[in-house]
Structures are given as C-alpha cells and as structure tokens.
Length: 460
Image 1 (tube, rainbow, N blue to C red):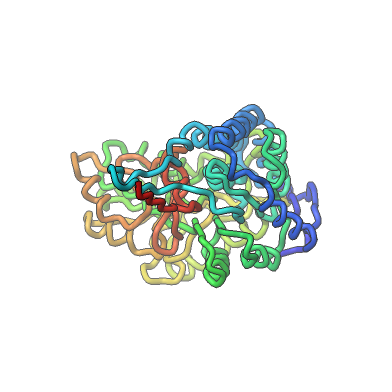
Image 2 (image 1 turned 120 degrees about the horizontal axis):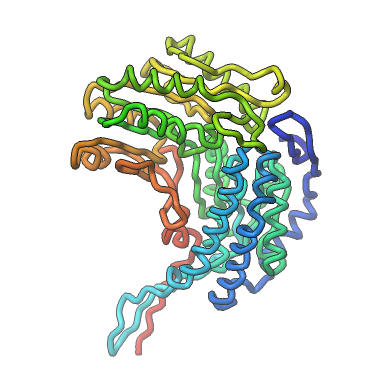
C-alpha cells in the first residue's frame, strides 16, 4: 500500500483528498485509549441510548453520506443513500434488541444451585473494513459490539478515507465516549502490530480471500478471536420460471448492483437448459439497453464506474483469460472511453461457456460480469452450484411446489434464499462457509461473536 490514504473519484480518476498515515506513536495512543474508557461497565441501556443516537445521525445525514461514497467509490446515488439508511437501521436494531440478546442464559435454578451464562464484553477489537460498502460493512461489525461493551479500533480501506472520517464524526456527535470508537489510517505493518498487541482481544475482517488469509494467520498466531467475511461466487439457480424475460432482468439487476462489487452477489447464474438460450438472449438484450453514466446523476438504464483503476483492469484481464480458456463473451467487457475517458468504467459483460476445471472457472469476478451456466437436471445444477471453494450466499427458484426447497437443502453456503434472493436485513445473520470465511454478523448471532460467555454457578 502507499504511504497515504487517497480519495480518488472513480468517475473521473481525479484525486480529491489525501491523508498521511498515522504514526506509530498515534497507534499506541489509540490502543491505550481503547482500554481506558469504562464503556463496558456502563449499563447496557446506557450504551443503547448512545447507539440509538448513532442510528439517528446515519438516518439524518443519509443524503450527505451517500454523496461522499458516490464521489469516493462510485456507488450510484440512490444506492449510496440507501446504504447510509440501512446502516442507521442496523444501529437502531441493536440499540432496541441488544439488551434482550445480551441477557443471561439461565442453565439451572434450584433450591441448591443457580447457574447462568453471562454475556460480557471482551475488550478492544480491531476492525479491518473494505471499500465496497463503506458504511454498511462498518455498521454490521460496530453496532453489536458497541452494545456488548467492546471498544473499537477501525482501520478502513485506503481508498475511502472521507467515508471513514464521516463515520468517526457521527460517533463523536452521538456522544460515543472518547476511546470507544477510533478511526486509524494504518498500514499493513501497523495492522499486524495492533493484532499482536495483548491489549487487543479480537479482529474482524471483511475483504479479499488473500487479505483474510493474512489477517487470520496473524490472529491465530496471537491467539485472537477472529471473524472473517471473504469472497463469494454465489450460485443463483433458476430451475423453472413462468417468465424468462422477468427472471433474466431480475437476475441482472441484482448482479449489477454496486457495479457488481459485492461479496454475496449472484456471480454464477445457473439455469435449466430448456430456458438457457432465451435467458442468455434476454440478458444480452438488457445489457445493450444500458450505457455509462455519472453515478451522482444516477439516471435510469446507466451503469457507473468501478471503484478503482486496478479493479477495472483486473476485470478486463479476467475476461481475456476466460476467452483464452474457451469461454464465450456475448457483449461488453471493455474499458469505456469518450466522455468518460479517465474514469474507471467497464461495460457490463455476459459470459458463457467458461470451461469447468479451468483456473478462471474458480475465480471470483468482482465486477459487472454476468456468468450464465446451463444445467440439464437439478442434480447437475446442484453440482455446478457447489463446485466452488466459496460458500457465502445462494438462491434457487422454481415454480413447482417444494422443488426449490429440496434443492436448497443441498447447497453448501452460509445463506440461501428460496424463491427469492438470499435475504439481507439487519435481523438476518450474514456469513459463509468454506473459503468465504467464518463467523456471523447481523441478527441475534451478531452479538454472539466477540463476547465472553462466562459461566457463573452459585451454590446457595
């Protein structure tokens, strides 16, 4: 990484702001402060009142917050504002439900013995967060842990420093005590130093598989609790449909959200062979209807830029590799020039015939690439769905009663939607299996990770 955090506008390629890395002395001050707050000793209802204020500020500032991430990582304006509002909903969910989730679990209560499991904070945590959802990813880690009484050191992605500072400002304005939530502009060596410090009790990482390997190794070496949410190559299976056109357009709308830059996006669309040709044709027709546009204007039938030059180049390179391996590119996959020259635009692509067993077949396409596969039976569709090292989200659709439910039982993933995309709300646990990581965020399980489940057994 560079020696600074840089905010670069993906639509133009222009540098908007630059921030120096924190010094080692500053990192030490942050660690000291994180252990000197008294936050965990407050009654949980007191913490809830402050977390509720955080929620309100995300909601009140949603427009402004959305503009920041549109400028900083290219998210279309409506999606950007929606992300800020969703983040507020996550904080509110935990403010309202956290006291119930953190209640003692009574194991026995007799005339002789009372045994309970208390859910207590474990201390200071490090969060290493990605650029693709600059508020949402932070909210789902921070909200439950603030409610538990843990303190947070937050290292955000190097490309979204303005988003990171906006979150810090919300925490300060909401009355989160000094030292309870602290943003740092740290490099890789400083991250390793923080993880290895005995005053830090755990680390949460969302990002690439490669990054997860590094963070997981550091956490394991130092005997620290870790939660990892990594890559995904989610199967989206359509066994049958009464309307191929709508099914294809719905699938593409999901795939192209956030310009295809989502861990749990439907990266592999698997359809029954009897509708395959019509489905591909409809997908190509839909892609041809959309054109590049300014994400701040967010006009209908337009697509925005990718988050960075490197991200755009990588997608183009992956498509070239797929073609060399024998895949068919039906439309798109080019860097966009003209009035958008200098921006990080790649035209959405429809890709088929990716050879099973090839190296590219197993790679995650983190961008606007729609991969479509044909399956001759439910058994073949399930084999394709599970033929991946990832296991994050998934979805399956069928018109026949019980068919999709039966299919879903065999999917190897942390989340499955039946006749709907995998649900993603503040109340639904989020996480995966296999090389998509481990641990869960959101829902009740989000408050069951970085917690001391302390058994207290009292003889009366």
